[in-house]
Amino acid sequence: MAPQPVFALPCGMVLRPWRDTDAQVLASAYEDPDIRHWNRTEPMTPTGAVERIERWARRWDAGEAAAWAVAHPDEDGAEGAAVGLVGLADIDRSGASAEFLYWLLPAGRGRGAVGQAVTAVSRWAFEECRLHRLRICHSVGNPASCAVAVKAGFPLEGTMRGALLHADGWHDEHLHARLATDA
Image 1: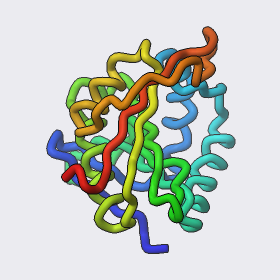
Image 2 (image 1 turned 90 degrees about the vertical axis):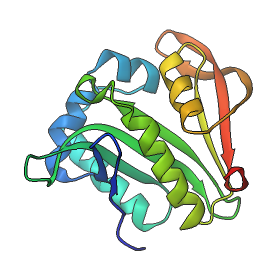
Image 3 (image 1 turned 180 degrees about the horizontal axis):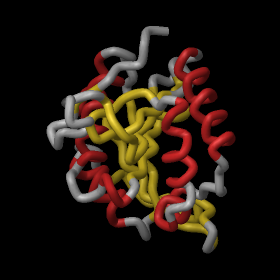
């Protein structure tokens, strides 16, 4: 597969592939209470984070998934420290669909980065990967994820009852989707 693209976002942040040097950030992200609550993550060691990053690279090479680090550029414009994740999971080439995943550490919040990242990755997925349908699913109790979906052009299609298990029990989930034909 081709190298994973890098995207410059209007907010000044970038999307870039995860690197082994991001392992400590990834491990610490999985300690963040909001990220753990909404994403059902387990604590992760730096070694486990390196393994996760390597698995993401293998899944990219196999065309199964794509995970980008949301990063602040350094003062010299280089791709800097990771503060979040935006990715496509469950890429189904025959069904031409995939599902978004995203989270941000507090240092990356409040700039609109995730909505901009979802918009950029959507454009790429529709144009370069020829996917037809992209979806975002999130707990109905997570209004920030709902706002990201709507701002990125993913209308609410419905509510899936008891569809997602979180630490505090089963949650109803909103289903948002966007089609390549939605422009």
